[in-house]
Figure 1: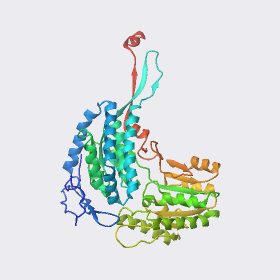
Figure 2: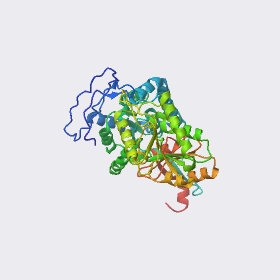
Figure 3: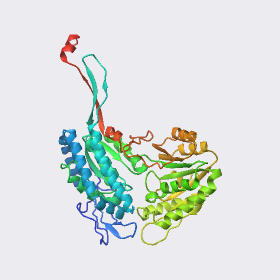
Figure 4: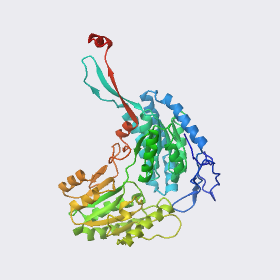
Amino acid sequence: MMSGLPHEARPDEDPVPGAAKAPSHQTLPETRAQSVVTEIRRDPRTGQPVARPVQSDPARADAALRSARSAWTMWRRVPQAQRSGTLRELAGAVESAAHELADLNSRETGRLFDDALAGVRSGAESLRRYAELSLLRSGPTLAGAFSGLDFTVYEPRGLVLGLTSWDDPVATACGIAGAGLAAGNVVLLKPSERCSALGRRLGRLFASAVPPGVLSTLTGDAELGAALAGDDRVNAIVHVGSAAVADSLVAASCRTGAHLVRGRGGSSSLIVDRGVDLGWAAACTAQAAFRHAGQLLSAPRRIFVLRDVEEVFLDELAEQARRWAASERVGPVVDEWARGEIHRAVLSALDDGAVVLAGGQFDEGPGSFYPPTVLARCAPSMSIMRDQVRGPVAAVMSVQTFDEAVAEAAEEPCGASATVLTRDIGHAQLAAAEIPASNVAVNGLAVGVTGTDAPGLPQAGSTAGFGPRLLDELSRPKVIHLEPPVAARGRGEY
């Protein structure tokens, strides 16, 4: 049951650009840690206040869980065609509010408006995709006795808790909601506290298009998420975010028996082979490393370049970084705390022998901007290459051979994706076979493909992308053996 959840501000509160200070919070007796959201979210571009924190208290969280459990008894019996129709209505509602949602996303997290708008539209497409996929699902049928039949059906797990990150919040929320509802589950979403105003607005949009309790949203901090994940009424957890949080959910799922579907951790990689156009390779690397200020989970944290082309490639990449900075193609990082983490990792790399070729310093003006940064002479032991440092930093390490590059990319912490830039088909095949990433792209960016799965490496908890496999993860297979009673009696079994 719920415990340790902090006090709630007004749950229906809208963003308030004129807010001057955070509201006070009274700590409930059962709350052991001061983990309530106490800071007003500020626009990372200007530093101006965007929204007050809204924290769901234990009573509201308990009511949401009870409502969801009650709604499931109805929703699981709704015909699949009707559930698919509901998903299409949800997609239309999201699309109709696309500009409003993108603007909120941009103001809370600093994401460039066009990128945020693309994320919203991708979310609407996910809902439509699951509406169609769910109509085509069928389990395998096996050949059994002459008059018998063995087949598999998929049943919903029950209540799905979706814990979403701030880097692409609408797309991930829609993906979890789409797969969950299409499979016959009810869904409770807890968005990142870094975009709670967007989460509330999207939650109201969702709630207006479905029966009460079928798709609900609670906003709050990490303590709320941990308490929800530890509640034994939750049957499945889908988490998209940091590896550290995903690891903490393993223990909770073991205690409650909830099925855990987690995001893939680690550090993604990019390899630049000899023989490629180095100007093109630098442009590809800059796009991968600097887009959305390097905060996407697919952004490469480890870049390996062959030593005999290293000098030219680094010159081209540094020039790309300066162009990106001058053109304002890089928005701010999500907040000042994140900027501090990025800068500490850069300084640590410099202390360990890395060299800055571009960026590496930031202005103290308004907002939380960090410049596109290129580091050379990096090593696998550096934090900038090992940890999920989410920022516009291209950390480059030179290697003697392509085989060495593949071996380094395959080492832990191997991330969800890998990009290989090469003209050698043998090298491409080697990388695809040897790098244990979820998504390996050759001569293109490893950003995932709409409608595909990215299952990742075996870890505690299953991993899946937003494709057909997530439908399976949020379902329980049931094998049914069926034969007529006359035939059974004829064999003398009854």
